[in-house]
Length: 601
Image (cartoon, rainbow, N blue to C red; front, side, top):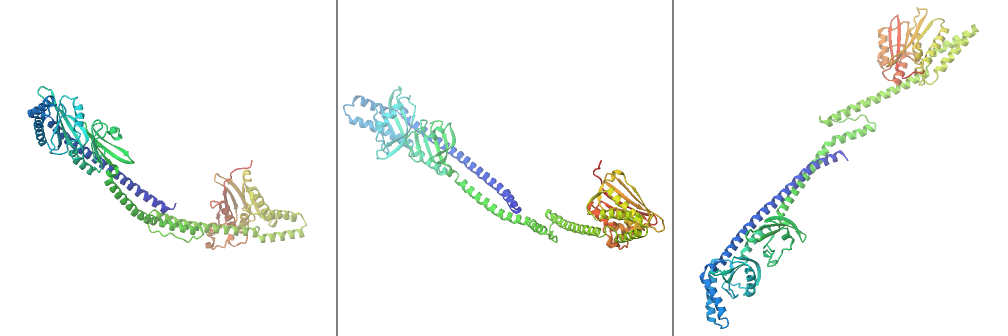
C-alpha cells in the first residue's frame, strides 16, 4: 500500500471511529432517555388514571349504600316484598304501580347524586327489578343480569361488590358495555330485603385512555385480577378473559415494564395495578413509535457524521498527498540514481524530517559519486601499474649491460663466470615474467633479491654487500611478487655513492600483532628534505603536483610508487611504503603488510 493511502486510511480511522462511537453512544443514550421518560410518564399517568377510577368506584360504592340509610327505599322494598308474597295471584296492579313509582323515584334521586352512573337497578328479594329509563341504556336482559349479580352478592355480608365489564343490549337496541357495583339491601334487623346494582358505562375511563394512547401512540387495556377485560382501546377484548395471554402472564408485581414481540412487532408493555380494585391497566407501545423521535435524531446524527467524514476525507486526501509529495519526488530521484544519473539533487524546502532526509540524500549521492570516481581511479591506476610492471619488470638498460658483460666475459675469459651469470639471469627472468598477482613467500622474494645483487656483483665485482636479517619463521609469509627487488634496484641506481668503494644493503623483517614490517636500508647518497617530501607526496597520489625529477616519476621501470600502489590496491590504504632518508647518510624504505594469520609449522 502506498504511503498516501496509508496516511489516508489512518486519517479516516482517526476521524470515523470517534465520530461513529460518539454518534452511536449519543443515539443510544437518547433512546434510553426517551424510554425511561416514556415509562415514567406512562406509569404516572396510569397511576393517576387508576386513582381517578378508584375514586369513581368508591363513589359508586357509596351510592350503592344509600338504600341502607334511606328508610323510604327500604319501606318501598319491604312493600314490594310483601306484595309479591300476598298478592302475587291477585294482580293488584294499582298497589304494584304505587310501589313501582315510589322505587323509581328513589332511583331518580340516586341518579341525581352522581353523574356517570348509567343505570341504577333496585331489586326486591324476589328479583323484581325497578329502574328508571330516563337516562336510557337500560338492560334488556335485566333478569339474567340479576341472577348473575345475586349469585355473586349472595356470598357477601352486605359490602359492595365490584363486577367487571359485561356486554349487554340496551332498550335502544344498541350494544353497550358497563361495569357494575352491586350490594345487598339490608333492613334494620339485618335481613336481606333486596339488591341494588349501579352500572357505570366504560365511557368514564375512555377519555383518559384516549389521552394516554395519543401521547404514547400505543394501545391500552384494563383487566381485573381474574383476567377479565374491563376496557381496551380497540374494544375488541371487552368482556373477554385474557388471563392466558403472554403479556398478562409476564406482568408480575404491582407495576413494571417489559419488551415483547407480538405479530413480528416489538412492543414495550407498561403496567400498574390498583391496590383497591386489583385492576391492572396496561399500555402497549410499539418500539418503532417509541423511537420515532430518536430515529429522527439518529438519521440527523448519521447524516452529520457522514457529511463530516466526507469533508474529512477531502482534507485527508489533500494532506496525505501534500505530505507524501516530497517522498514521491525523492523516489523519482532515486530511480534516476539507480539508472546511473548521479547529477540529481533534492530540493530542500523545509527543515522537518523530510528536509533532513533530503539533505542526507544529497550528501549520500555526492559521496557515492566520489566513491565511484575513486574506485574508477584506483582501477585505472591498478591497470597502469600492472601494465608498467609487465612492460618493465627488469630495467632494459640493466638487461643490455648484463648481456654485454656476459658476451665480453665469454669471449675474453672463456671461463665459468659466463655460465654462472647466465644461470642467475635465467632465474631472474623466470621469476619476473610470471603473474604479478601471484602470491609468493617472503623467502622467495629474498632469494630473488640475492640473485639480483649477485648478478650486479658480476658486473661490478665486490661493489655491493647484501645482508639479510629475517627470522626463519617469517620466510613462509605470503606477499605479492616483486615488491622487494624494485626497492633494492631503486636504491642501487639512484642512491649509489661513487665516493664509497662498497654499498651496503640490508633487508630486515619483523612482525607485530597488527602488521609485518620489511625494511631495506642502504648507505648511499640519501635524499634532502625537499626530495623526501615530494616522494612522500607521490605515495599519496600527489606526485603530479610535486613536479619532482626523482626516479620514481621519470624512469620507465617499476619504481617505489609502483610498488606502493600495488600494495595499497591489494591490501588497503593502511599499508604501503614509508621512506626515511638523510642526505649523505643513506635511505630506509619500510614496507608494511597485513599481520600474518598463521605460520607453517
